[in-house]
Image (cartoon, rainbow, N blue to C red):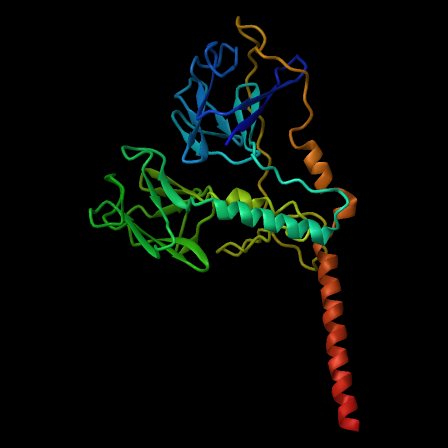
Length: 351
């Protein structure tokens, strides 16, 4: 699938500039040398700094052991680090911010005259149709160590998977810090969970050690000893496409520790939950100016925000359907029905 990279140059003392690149290739390189697909002519940028690679239909950003590092969504990748990419992710290389977006061959478009119900119904039909074409199953991918790149597909026929160092495990990961039977992955109608099997070093998901079976979500990072796995669900981007459609807002579930995950504004709930959103991380620093390479090649006129028109269309007032008002309407309808039944029963008894 083609990808689009919106590159924004933010150098102190200079006007911000934006450049748009589109690629239909498996590897896109970033660095100071002119042979890179995206040249960043700063002396603080390595000659071969980072690359975006496609693997089995998924894209990853990989730091090529650069001197000053690469950021993914405001967090350092680390030298040689690699992360799964999803639409809207931000890659930062010094003063350059790169927004990642896949370009769908069949974009979902809707006429502005459609009613909300019709819009939502057609959205579901198109998403389900797209999901029907995708045969890719969720899987675990090893992100570092001698088994880097190794993957285990969680097919429909699988219900339990043992991960560990022993040869009899379903998913064998070779690392001295991993126990012989380290973790168990279970797949059922409720989703996919992972739990520790009493290992010495435990199971850590997104930097938090788990206690008991824990549900896995797309992009979760699982640490088993010194080995990092990424849980990848290829259908997640299709499901997330529903989030911007009225009536199909994403419903956050409560985490195992009881922290509320709902952080949306405009809530009319009587009780206030804990903040479930992520804080905005500071922008990457650095004060170096342009190097001898000069301006970025392929300069184009400044661009507006990548998803500006789409965001404006989705947030248009005519399509705004606050969830709390919808709940009130449902309650009123249920109350009317209950009163009607009670009235009918009373009238029958009085006859």
